[in-house]
Amino acid sequence: MNLMMLLEMAASGFPDRVAVQNGADKLTYQELFQSAGGVAGVVSASDCGRLAMLDVSSLALPVGLFGSAWAGIPFVPLNYRLTAEELDALLAQIAPAYLVAEDERVEALAGFPHGSVVPRTGFLEQARAAEAPDPTWPMDPEDIAVLLFTSGTTGAPKAAVLRHKHLVSYILGSVEFGAAAETDAALVCVPPYHIAGIAAIASSIYSGRRIVQLPNFDAKAWLDLARAERVTNAFVVPTMLSRIIDVLEGAECADLPHLRALSYGGGKMPQPVIEKAMRLFPDADFTNAYGLTETSSTIAILGPDDHRAAAASEAPEVRRRIASVGRPLPSVEVQIRNDEGRVQPAGERGEIYVRGEQVSGEYLGQGSTVEPEGWFPTRDAGSMDAEGYLFLEGRADDVIVRGGENMSPGEIEDVLLEHEAVADSAVVGVPDEQWGEAVAAVVVTQPGQSVSVEELQEWVRARLRSSRMPQRVEFVDELPYNETGKLLRRKVREQLAEG
Image 1 (cartoon, rainbow, N blue to C red):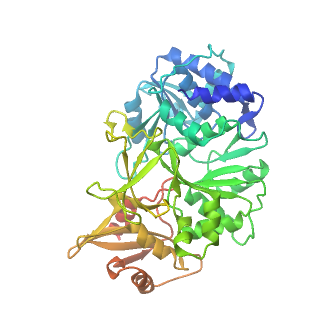
Image 2: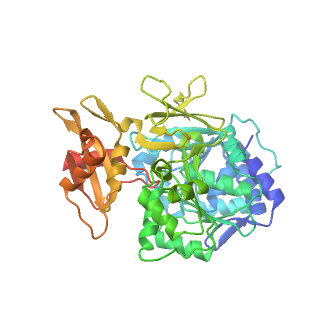
Image 3: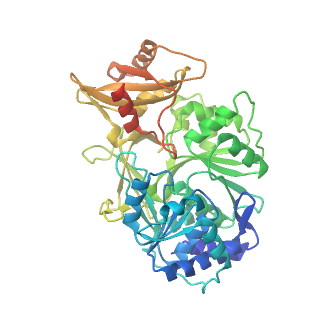
């Protein structure tokens, strides 16, 4: 197994079809194949053990990803939003590296002690001009394909190890080769250092779909580009979809008749947001894709039929599934376990464990966290209903322990979001002398609306046990999310402590 298998098949099947475009610049499948070979020759001659990329999405991203696979070295996309100190700490872990950087950053990296630094423009020119070596590449499935540093929302980032067997098995198990029409186009706006960005490239290439890159997300720019390029498929994180809906305020529909499939994931999607989106994009099939970096992307899907059935149902147990992440892929097993490691029955909360060929659970220099039987502890909390629908309830570490009672922040947040005046909410535990921890809620109100602390407290108390009622409620303009849509509860706690 090697990622280059996917590109080789696509280049052989539809060589003249556009594979990826960024603005006016583009590469056909054959040109992408040749450029990947050119990169493989250049990087192999550099004696660097990794190809790293410090840049927004550009044509250099797929060229670097497949060029690394051809050369048999790991590809390492880096977070371009990091400080110089944070970046240096990551680069030290992957040295010596062949670092491709945004042209404007190269001068600041002139003293780079961890390998070679080349500007993106020069990298692409060299890739396009270089003669590709013989089309042979390593086929050991255990070779490392990609190193992805985790977001570091609860601690220092660490590099998740994704081997070729993990990524290829995910693609082969979830994508049909050549299924896309030549007119199909996928709008990719997630950062390249996120697993969704890597998966979007691999899946689009294997299906034969044209990739349209939006390097920096802006809701209006997203809509304009989707219309101009007649985009048929797109993936967004919840915060992106919420901003797109804000731009469409007052419109009856999004005016995107070509958009057939809109997928989302990367964080919890508030039910009011997805319900508004389904009204604004009536021609689109919605899919909620849940996955982790350590699982090579998606492990569970709430498909279009599930969305429509939940939206149309009067039964509470069916309607609530629109807020779920659906059911596991056929190639993946999921268990919910309690603190003692026992598998929980339907409806009971616990930690989510997954098992399957695409699951890595390994970190550079730290080994694997996968159990001998193949189960990976995700550290996500959740539950499954009787029909196998998986519901996320935040991180397992986010549990609030009040007087010995464990509480899920997600459960309380869901109730707050049902209030017509609440646009977003975050619930965390704060120190309390009597109970150990107290429930605190931070709330963003809908534009033009207001609500009192007492009203929200009574709202929660009437729908959950009184112990789950927030003792403290604060109002803010917006909640802290990272660029992939994950709520930064650590920041919420810090803000409450400062307050």
